Every structure is written in structure tokens, then in C-alpha cells.
Amino acid sequence: MTLGPKCECPARRDLSGAFHVGVSATAMHGQKPTSYALGVLFISGLIAFLSTLPFFSPSNIFRQTQSRLQTPAGVLLTRLAALRPLTAADEKLRLVLDDGGLDARLLYARFGPHVLSTCPFARPGDVDAKQMYLLYALPSILTPHLLHLLTLGVATSGLLSGREGARWRTVACIAGVVLGAAEVWFIANYDDKVNVRSTRVGEIDFVYWKMQVWRGLAIAAVDGVLGWVIWLQATGRAFMAPAPTADRILDHTRLLEVLLGKARGLGVLRNGTVRDGALRGKVDDYWVKEGEVMKDVFEQPEVVETQRNALRRVDIARIGREAEAYVDSVLGGVRVAAPP
Image (cartoon, rainbow, N blue to C red; front, top):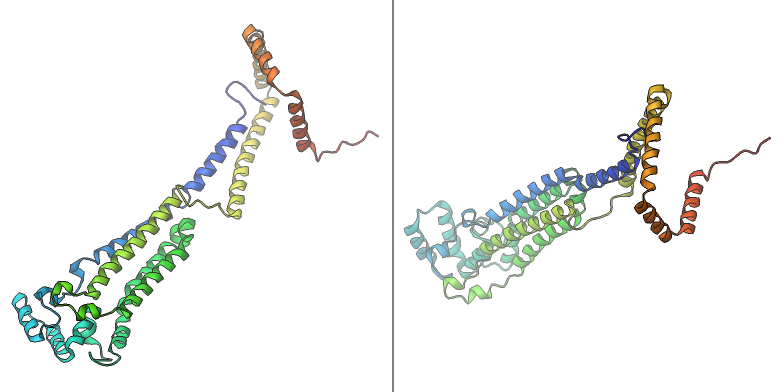
């Protein structure tokens, strides 16, 4: 029952507004946790990208001295001493290069200076030297990828990134594993023939330094793509998935609770109005005046003609069927007792 011109029944408005709020809440749900996940991915990608800078890589004495792989170790260290003071690691590397010859230089280009000078399992020139040096280098090769997998797991956890990030956890972990496996496979199956035939420093393929750049760029790319995908899904621009049934039932239950509370409040207000004589009189006066005003409006020729035109276009039979179906749906469970 409407109480006055400013007390119109809010049921329809509340229903549409509540649905709008529910949809908006669903779209905005998890944006704060998603921002945490995006922050983690941004930091991880930034660190991976910065790791490609020469500052974070060990110095390459062949490039520093512009020397070929066949250059004797003594000449190599003499040229290096003219550029910077020699260290104990340089002297140790010199001994390894002197003893290992070209094989040591090929291992240097593939695994870097630290692995070549500190591996205790083999010496350059041994039959299984490449396999032993690869096993010794595996921890340093896989450590960045394991840290990256840990970052991906944290960024796609349901606690940190919500439903949006958790959906991509399997894909992200597979991508991280593929990156690590691809690097190990490439280094294990690398062919040294290019470096054996090299005659200038520009022709040498320094795999160790090249893989550091590729690894950093690949990890940064995976983090960037994953963050972009999570952001698209969190903002409703793409990859939208229907909410789980339990969540939808919970949202609808909350919506019905809101509408039920408003309906109860309206019933209390109506009950108070009916019980109060002064308010009831105001309501009656309002409807009397409302009837007079609407009577004048409907008696105008333009309104009468418009009503006739509208009635000509209305399917009375269809409206009757819809009204009957509505009444049946509302009163379908009501039983009228027969008079005694």
C-alpha cells in the first residue's frame, strides 16, 4: 500500500538495485587480493629483467681482452692485468685453462667461470667431462627457476590472489617448469662445433652469458603475461568464468534477506499508519485527491485517444493468460475449505 506521494513502494527499485549491487560486488570481489598478486608478479618480473644487465653477470675475460678461445692463458691474463688487478679466482682459472686447453675454454663458454674453476668431479678433457660439469651446474641453473615457481605459486594462491589468480595456477606452474626444462635441455644438448671453428671473438657463442639474458627475459615475460591475464579477468574484460554454484546461492540468499528486511519494514510502517487515525485520514485524503486528479487527466481528449490506440495494440487474450498463470503461481498452494 502506498502511503503518499513520497512513500511509493520500493520493491521494484530495491530488486533492481540489489541485483545491481550484487553484480557490482561480484565484479569487484577479489580486486584487493588481486592487486597483491599483481604486485608480487611485478616485483618478480622486475628482478628477472634487471638480472639480464651486465652488472649482475660475472666478467667474461675473453670479451674483456678481445681474445680468441685459442689464446694462451698466460697471454690472456697479461691482457686482463692491463685492464684491472688480477684476483685469486683469475689465477685459479688460469691454471684450469692451461691444463684443459681448448676443452676448458669450451666449457668456460658453456658453463661460465665459476663452474669451470670449482667443479671437483672432473677435469676438462675427461671422457664424461661435459656430463659432470652439467651435473655440477644444475643447482645454479635451476635455482632461478625454482624461485620463479615459488613466486608463481604465491601469486596464484587463493589466499593472495583470490579466485582470479587461483584459476591460472596450473598453467603458470607448467610454464615455469617448461622454462627450467628448456634451459637444461638446451645447455645439455648444445653443440660446441661453432666455438671450435671460431677464429674471432665475435664468432664465439658464449652460451652461459646468453642464457642469463634469455632466462631473465623469459621469466619476466611469463610474469607479465600472467599478471595481464589476471588483471583482465579481475576487471571483467576477459576470461570471465561463471561463479561457483555455492557462491551464487550465497549471493542470492543475501539478496533475498535484504528484500525481506525491506518488506518487513514496509509492513511495520503500513501497520502503524492503519492503526493511527490521523495518518489513516491523511492517506484517505491523498487517495481521494489522487482519484480526482487522475479522473481529470483521463477525461482529456488526448489521453482518451491514446488509451484507445493502446488498447487496439494489446492482446487481451494473452494478458488474460499471463494474469491467470500469475495467479496460479501465487495461489497454487492455497486450498479453499468447503463450507460445512
